[in-house]
Image (cartoon, rainbow, N blue to C red; front, top):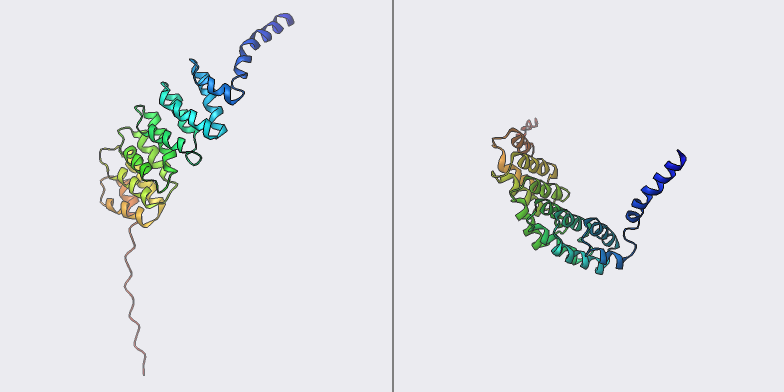
Length: 222
């Protein structure tokens, strides 16, 4: 019995070892990007993304353009930090125009981390009007951490778009109500008469309270 057990362990080990030896250095990772096996390319993406060097980011950005697997394109977008390299910014911008919904969805987060970038803002506005509900929700969620006027405007666009799903409109209303900024409130107050009770409630919650009339002070007796 022990003999068969030992043989089983050794036999299984012959199939485990190649996976453990995946990618050891940059040269191997760059070579793996050209592999026919998606697993090899994925290992290379993770390895190069962790390097955070201009050369690694350039290689991944170029791989994004050549990669046929949408899942791997998504992984490339998520592996790159737009605050590290312009290669990452270029990749995120390309992802926003991708034919695959998951890839466009992945583009929302990195683009939202580029404040005061007009090109990124333009891409986010386009994603906010995407035909896919998950993409619109990704934009709303990504911009929820920023209380900027630009973020409020884009999220307000999602709220106002009646062609969007009720789920996306409600998510937009909730985020705007949490921002508590003049720009966010201005977007919400456009919907105080909305047909949906949740959206209406969110808008009404940010409606300025009516000023209480001041009580006239009694005249002092002479």
